[in-house]
Length: 404
Image 1: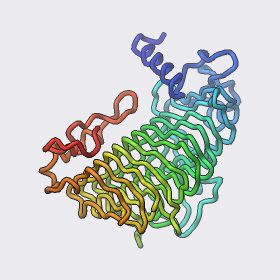
Image 2: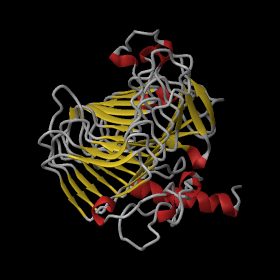
Image 3: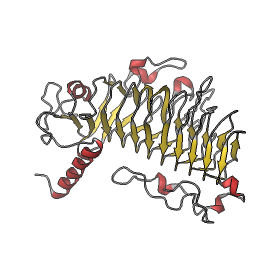
Image 4: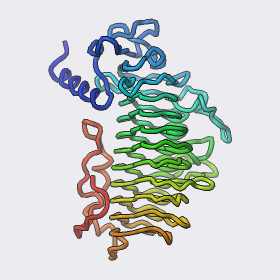
C-alpha cells in the first residue's frame, strides 16, 4: 500500500499532468487512453502494465496513440538504437512520455555508433539524437539524456512541450530543434557539458533552435552551461523565438583537450548564417556570465532583436554584441558588469536605460552579489529556477538587469 507521502506526491503529479503533460498512474486514465509502463526488468512482449511492464521505451513509443501516457520506471536504459518518435498526438490528446512518480530515468546513448562518429565525419539525419523526434503534440518530461549523438533532436515538430529535461555529456548539442517546427515549449531544461569531438567543438551547444522556421517557439527557465560551443544558438532560424528567464555560463572552453579547438563560446547567439536572416528574436530577464566569448551576440542578425532586462557578467568578449551593419536591435534596461567590453552598438541600434546609458563604473562592487551559487543550485520542486534575489542586482537600486 502506498503511504500518505507517496500518495501526495502522485496526486501532485496528476495535477501537473493536467497542466503540463506529466504523468498519471496506471489505470487512472479515461477509458480510451492507456498508460504504458516501462521498466528495466520488463519484457517487450508484456502488456505494459505496472505488474507486467515493457522493457524498452521504443516499444512503448511504437504502441502509443493520441492520449496515451508512457511512464518509465527508474533506472538506466542503454540504447543500441536511438528512440525514434514518428507518431503524433493531437492538440486535444497529446502523447505523454516521462518518469514514473518522479523516479530517476537515464537514457544512455553511449553504445550508439553515431555517438562515436570520427573526426571530420557526419551524423546521418535518422541517427541524430538519443531521442530522435519527427512528430507533434508530445509532452516529454523528467528524463535525463546522456552520451547520445545529440541528446534530443526534433525536426519538423509542432505543439510539443519539453519540461524538466536534463541533457548532458552528449556528443553533439544537448537539445536541437530545427526544420519546420512551431509552437514548441522548452521549459526548465538543464543542458551542460555537451561536446562534439568529430568537429573539435564547433557545433555542440546546450540548446540550439536553428536551421529552420516556425513561429511560437518559447524557451523558459533553461540553464545552459559548460558546453563546448555556445549556450544557446539561433543560427539560421528564420522565425522569431522567445527566450526568457534563462541562464548561460561557462560555454566555449576546451575542457576536453580537442586539437584545433573550434568552440565559439557565446552565452546567447541570436542568429547567424551566410547571409544571416534578419529575425526579431526576443531575449528577456536572462543572464549570461563567464563565457569564453560574448555574453549575448546578434551574430550578424540585423533583425529587430528585443533585448530587455538581461544581465551579463565577466564574459571574455563583449557583454552585448549588437553591432551588425544595419541592425535594428532594441536594448532596454540591460546590465553589463565587468565584461571585457560592455556593449558594441550598430548605427541603427536603439539603446535606452541600460547600464552604459546610465554611466558610472559597473564592476563587482556595483552589485549586491556576483556569486552564482544560488542560481546554479538545486531547482525548486516544480522544476523552476531557484531564487537568487541578490545576484547581479545593482547596489544603487537601478531597475535594470535580470531578477531571479
